Image 1 (cartoon, rainbow, N blue to C red):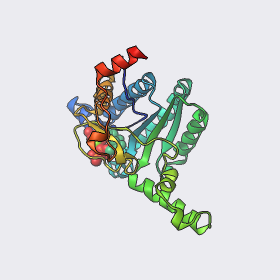
Image 2 (image 1 turned 90 degrees about the vertical axis):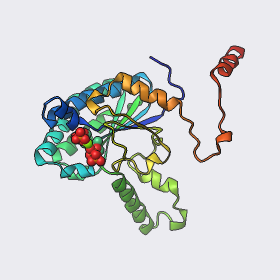
Image 3 (image 1 turned 180 degrees about the vertical axis):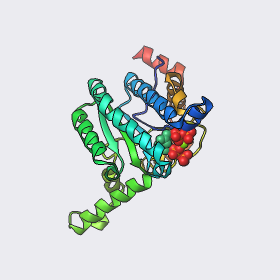
Image 4 (image 1 turned 60 degrees about the vertical axis):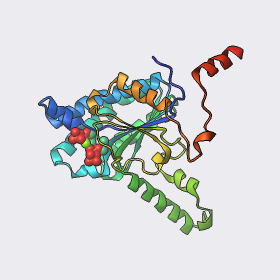
Amino acid sequence: MPEITPKPAHVAVIMDGNGRWANSQGLSRVAGHKRGVEAVKRLIKGCLRHEIPYLTIFAFSSENWNRPESEVNALMELLMGALENQTAKLDENGVRLRLIGDLNRFDGRIQKLADQAMQATENNSKLTLNVAINYGGRWDITQASKRIAEKVSAGEIRVQDIDEKTLANELTTSGQPDPDLFIRTSGEYRISNFMLWQAAYSEFYFTDLLWPDFDEAAFTDALLKFTSRDRRFGTAVDQIQHVDAEEKKEADNNA
Ligand code: IPE
Ligand code: IPE
Ligand code: MG
């Protein structure tokens, strides 16, 4: 396993292309989503192996309700199945599961399973896995704004004290680092309303691979590409310290 330095603290993934993968195999879209679940399991293992502490996956967007009812129902079944069958395994592996998104739109059974899974795993600390369902970046910012407005009307905070931190603290990812690495599969170059606020300084990695084909090697490639990026956060290029591999070796030897 290649050493990844620097390591992203948080990886966000738009898992796209299940439908196209299924079409290419002459299978139903639902079969593509099922294969997609296997790719999710591999990704979680990869994060655990690389000791990446936060992973957010986009499983169902606010806009995905516009798909045919049969596909939406199949996705709900898959989600429930995963919550029922995978929570214990996640727990054993030290994964803290968070479902992020507007859960009110889901039926009671899913909401109950989601609550149980989050409670059962809340004290785990190896990996926080955010599964975004009925999630939209605009929704996230809107719900955060509403909560702040409520606090202002209740007299708990003053308008002049609102800053970026106030907003970040009300987002569904409150208390977590922003995604360092943002991956999208399937050859699309858009963010489809995912983590709009949090991705302000993410490094983007796009691949033509369809989500069910995203394997360990693909994840390693994304991580290695990440390590080679210069993250400037608005500073001038000359301000970045470049440490050449030889220089580093020398420094290590002298240490
Ligand atoms: C991503 O795959 C999974 C979900 C959006 C639930 P798609 O279903 O969007 O696959 P394509 O884009 O049609 O190939
Ligand atoms: C984004 O994929 C949502 C998920 C992966 C859950 P979509 O397939 O829904 O996005 P668009 O429609 O291509 O932008
Ligand atoms: Mg798609």
